[in-house]
Length: 236
Image 1: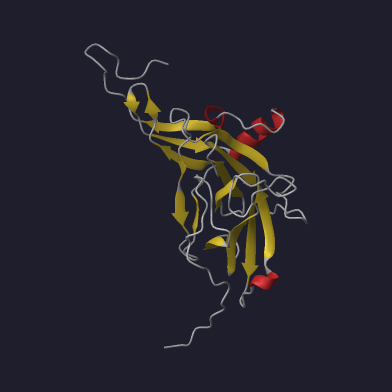
Image 2 (image 1 turned 180 degrees about the vertical axis):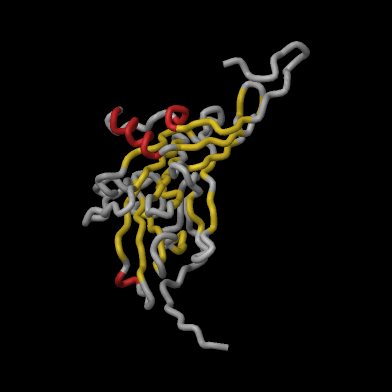
């Protein structure tokens, strides 16, 4: 068998000192993964508030910092600063063209936000989020009626990395949701136009557009009648 090179990055202790709040995290590097859009590049996150949401954020108002490691070889001494988040980092998904969706969340008010980082967006020198990012979602995690659904992923056959699934005709992103409604669950499939969503976000001075204003409905399950005589579909 061929000998494979190894580059020790960090020695992590047992995760037994995490504070008790729901969105507390370990005060050490976490969430190691490969960047889908950049070969041989690792991504990880570190807390800027020692992992405890009861602590104040960094002087600039951030709580998490994304880092990237390019290699091989790999060394924590040459890590690159990625974007920072004002709430707890949740994850980042990538389109084949390099456009990225970054999600953050906070337990105290059940808030979640999703930002769009355009392809080629440069990170500020101090690690701040790109100045040309824009807000796609700003909503409650518990609002199931207004849930836009989950972005669908597809695995690239060459790199074996997951990318956001896009409709070939217009590059719209595809979402699938459970469709909570007064008449029960009505699963749906939507197509989301990032171009239209960006126009609405800029028109509203940076506020997140409503989910329904940025998507087109491709399919939705009909609702069973609640009682004899009820219509099959929900009344609009």
